[in-house]
Length: 94
Image 1: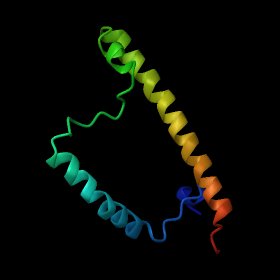
Image 2: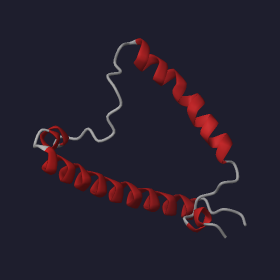
Image 3: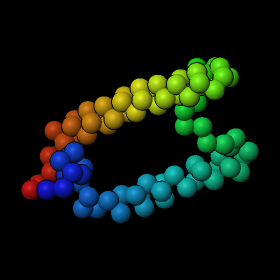
C-alpha cells in the first residue's frame, strides 16, 4: 500500500477529477482576467503579511516561516478532517 492510499486519497479517477475541475473553473478564470480584476497570485495574503515583509530581513524571514508553518498545519488538518467526513458519508467500495 503506498503512502497516498494511507492518507485516504483515492487515485483511481484522479485525472478525470482534475480535468473536470479545470473545465468548471475556466469561465471564472476568464471572467477575472477579462474584467481586469486579476492583480497577481498572492497565496499568503493575510492581514499581517505586509507588516511582516516590511519588518526587515531577519524578522521577515522568521515571520514568513511562522505564517507558512501555521497556515500549512491548519490547511492539512482541515483537509484531513474533511476527507474523513466524506469517507464516512460516502464509503469507498473495496
